[in-house]
Length: 390
Image (cartoon, rainbow, N blue to C red; front, side, top):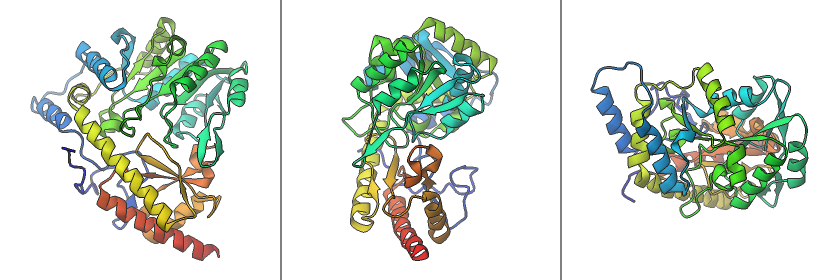
């Protein structure tokens, strides 16, 4: 592995949302890595900064060509560039699409436990959250197909937000599963917004399948969102791409992102994104090896030292989902005790819906030294929680 992911970068007092914590605290919550981004991105931004002029930017064809190149070489999918639209972020694009592809009072379906901000995009726009909760048994999640079919068939369900791969459980949906979702959506005239922001971060040898690439039916009902933000830890560049094969949906979404002012890039978004997609492949491959090593370290530590907890096996994201049912069904209280007693800041799972109240989510995208510190704090925090609740 040619890239070094062991550097302990000090991000305190840098306006970092993640690191806005007390001096003795260790944040392992929000999906933000503690690794420096790929060198090619840094060089592109430095070159842009050296011009000293930061006026209005437009999105060149080179940007869309770079996105296409990345999806072709990394994920075996070559979407046409005229299907693509630049947006300043996946979440605002979801909210915009909800407003355009559904009506006030409609149902927007999700699969809980799922990324909590999906709920905001639905509720804040006057739509109803309809969850087809994932089935959980034997430390694994699966789709309840009968429930999903029934809820997609509800006349008020006009849209589904698919998390592909799934956050927080780290599951990669198979091509057959995606095709089945697409067929159900098409039968019931439901648009599927596929959030694929975590698609690049997978266990080596176990890549994900873009929803729209699974079948022509999936492509026809889809709006896909991709971004370098999670992959390269460049969320503050505010750059993402919507890919919409169906012309009618594309025109409706296009009108929305322009009305909502989501189509104008900042001075570094284009250059940084092109650099990511054209020079960053080796860096991402090395990153995935490091994250896989970190996941394995968490699993081994928990099995040896915290046998009452159970790590959910996942092949995607740098977020680890841990079952705490044998300790408590109120992980909000557990996380509060852990943070108060040890300074470790992790996420209680209730915000993700479904059975999330039994789980915690831990961000493992950090150097091994920091991960070890976090795991030792987790062990001490769990001991403190038991003492307080005996």
